[in-house]
Image (cartoon, rainbow, N blue to C red; front, top):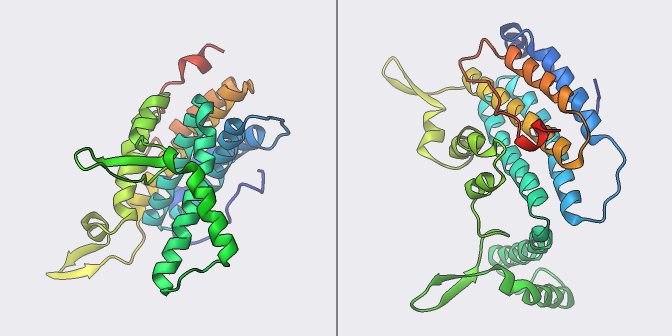
Length: 288
């Protein structure tokens, strides 16, 4: 098993519980990581920013899945769901940028907006005029002015009020997933929306951690097995989709291997109450 991917799972009671409940999961994960090595640990050359972005966003997804597994098999299911959300966001962005290489610069240049926001936040928090040397602060502002129009949105057509949009694209993530298709939209609810309720301060995030015991409202400090199972099943499914996207775009010729990984995925979690059938392969990859 490629060590650069494998999380230190430990030997907790929850780890034993998970792999006893799903005895085929360990082998399925081993083989999944072997395929990750084939897809991501390789030499390649590209002068296209969209290809580099899509590749490395996908590579981060592998690392995030390892973080998810580490938390889930040790009983921290809610923490694993939070990582599932970010993993899905990155996976959709990778596929979207593969499909729209003309938008790569728009994605990259938004980093200047983030830097300016960070600087402004620090000024507000610390109540100082600037937290950068004046020359650097002015350079940052000058850089921002060169791209500001690319990220400006009208918030009131009547009065003409404008503001800098909150993301590099005006599309929400669900719309991006619909644009990409290939099964990502079907994963949106379970991999992104529901985990978002646990990531943010919501009533749902409170309800997941509380219960009434003998008439007393109590914090649940035990293992979160249901959430752990949900996170691993959907995370495993999502990573398969990431690998399929990489394989299809870069024409790696791993179609038969990925079909085997899908079969192993279904078999590994057959005891789960969560539907584990992966979305059908895209027409492009199916035809290769």
